[in-house]
Length: 251
Image (tube, rainbow, N blue to C red; front, side, top):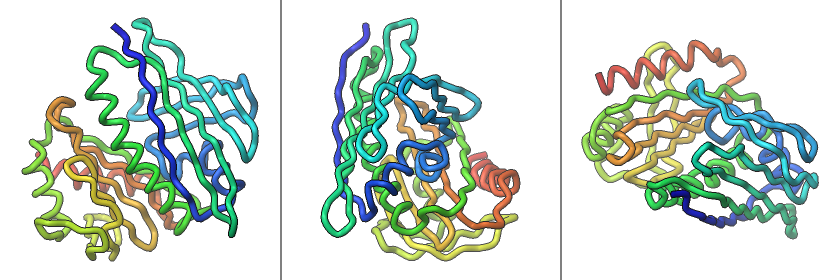
């Protein structure tokens, strides 16, 4: 039976309302920090689309006030579940902006697990949005998505990821890291987000890298959600290299 929910989040961003709007209400902007690929029309009533791992969901824009308010709603599923999003943008002194979001709708039978996952997921993605606006705003992006179902339980999975990245057993924000992926130039960076047992985030001069573990209730899937901002990055080459990295780590 569908269960009604509402989730609220807020973050202050070091960017103008116009820059925040570009990042949340345009396809290229959202593709620079969120998962998958997003198509967004620039008018209320327009039809958008979100695509990830070959699956697409259609949406309808329900609010479009540039620089102030953006809202959309997914199509309703046969079981009555759907999700709706509303972003509210408010400019502050010295060029900063407060972004508020409200996500609501109806979830399915496993609504408690899904609701908890959305809450911690938004914390990570809003942090990633802030990192994008601070370090990479306006740069072209290469989106890397990969997933390994039934990879490993949380503890051994993170141990393998830490070992591959040369990180200590206890990871802290600011720890140095070196990305050495076969087929790609090595990169030096830092840990910019720790959200164990679900998330690990890294930032280099040319990218934001996210490693995600779904947990046992969702099949112990390890997901890569990277955003590479190097101008010479080749989409197929970069994604193939990271997919191979993930396959070797969890054969």
